[in-house]
Amino acid sequence: MRLEKRISLITGAAGGIGRATALRFASEGAIVIATDIRMEACNETLSLLEEVGGSGMVVQCDMTHEEEVTALYRRITECYGRLDVVVNIAGGDTEPAADVTEIDYVKMSANIELNLSSCIISCREAARLMKSQGSGRIVNMSSLVYRGGPNQFSYSAAKGGIYAFTRSLAMSLGHYGITVNALAPALVEVPAFVAALGAERWEMLRKECAARYPLGRVATPDDVAGCALFLASDDAAFITGQIIEISGGARL
Ligand SMILES: NC(=O)c1ccc[n+]([C@@H]2O[C@H](COP(=O)([O-])OP(=O)(O)OC[C@H]3O[C@@H](n4cnc5c(N)ncnc54)[C@H](O)[C@@H]3O)[C@@H](O)[C@H]2O)c1
Image (cartoon, rainbow, N blue to C red):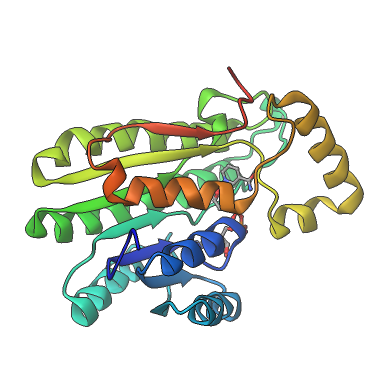
């Protein structure tokens, strides 16, 4: 068991990647705090992880509301007295495929708030707890578009911001025994994406990407979960400030 009894907070745990990460962590012995805004699906994640012998709890939290994030961390402190790992996964593109001339202030701000500000505030709370423990693992969700994307402006800016913030945090928290890293997946097949595009458009996108990625397929949520597990585990004890591309070689 690579995460035996490690108290692990996973945000976005009702979603495709968040659920896979919660299950993977639970199967490695972690005690999982699963949080999301979608409670029914988040409770389903908890049931699934209990089926594999895991344990934990569900807490509802809108990560874009600072007071809810502080309440979440307060609850963790009250229940467990410590936090070993946080994986900040909650996010998504609120302004997909917009032309640069059509950037919308409200949608752009939503992208920054959902993907970047929420991560910064979550990390602030985690740092307060982890600094006093003298240990901790922080894993943030970026995206391969942190390098830039031709039709994802505010989303790529937010995910690029996560990379810069992750490095800054790694520089500041290393002396406290805390590592901070980021994940940068290329296209991952998750139910929300397939539903949003519709089966036919999804299939076209999947085929187009699979043909372009050297490894010949798009990612599964478990590909990402495995990398989060590695970064949270003792095997990654000397890795910090890094962004790991889970991309099948999409942009070499
Ligand atoms: N699927 C991909 O191709 C891909 C690629 C790169 C990065 N990502 C990133 O991975 C993360 C997970 O995405 P996914 O693909 O599993 O999609 P998903 O939509 O299945 O999961 C996102 C989860 O975040 C939750 N969420 C949304 N707003 C929230 C809020 N304000 N507070 C708390 N939770 C909130 C949603 O309810 C959902 O359960 C996101 O940050 C996304 O940007 C996804």
